[in-house]
Length: 396
Image (cartoon, rainbow, N blue to C red; front, side, top):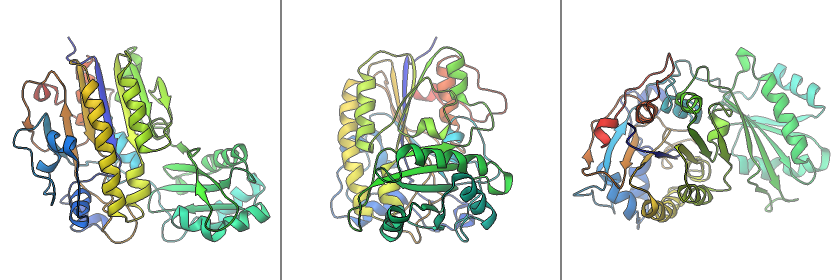
């Protein structure tokens, strides 16, 4: 018999809690996203996360560890070879990524790829380098508006991103160009994890602003995940934020796009008010996109405080047969050099109103314990080739 009728998994995108042993192999030494955020700001109030045990995972300057936690807390290690969004989420649901996705951070995309993209879209490419999305708009958006050229850029992630002004370029045209780019980058030597449409508004420098009409064109997972297993058994698999894009819709029964991380929590609260049977899987991307990559610890701290307020509302309406899991997909230490993600252990906070106990659980060697735990709860067999061992008995 299942212990929980509804499971909520909230991914606080990039909230790492300290370096892994192999972090130096990824260029990350002494990184700690949450710990260094706390060190960088004067005030930091996250009472709901505190009660769930977040400060028991890494020392925080302003937040004391919970003497008695409201649920269970621990840390997870990433087994896959990577530190990106898709790798982290796919591993949570049972897939070990052994070969990292292609990146073009140092060189930009090859001339052959750009030539093919220009030929098929009918538009000249400008940019073609690793850049901040906001900075490249300031530099090239006026040219794109004036000429109809297409801004293409990448980052430290395995991504090809295309900017388009919603009024002059048009959303449908931007999406068309991204669909072509996705087809082109399916070739092995050019295969990136995601092609991302980056629409914006504004007509001159200082006015450009990216909109919530972003769309990710991701690779399909290379195998079946816990999401597929849940859906095959007739269970609800509700995605909020970019979860649907990360899994390219595989295993999802219902999807909601979020305008922000606060909006994503508001959507989660609304879903929690209604009846469903299965999983609500949430990604809150602003932590990573707005603050981690931009190396803004103060902004990150403020976003965590806003999340904590919404978390308090969610906790107050959870039912006795609900399970809430809060975790992350990688780190993005806003005090570290560069703008890349950081290879870190991630938090595992688990709570249900029906829990009679709480406290620390032993660190696990893979994010995949999350998918395995959900599958066991619903009596669903994990697909062949997946990894992870359930924690269900420990979370009861």
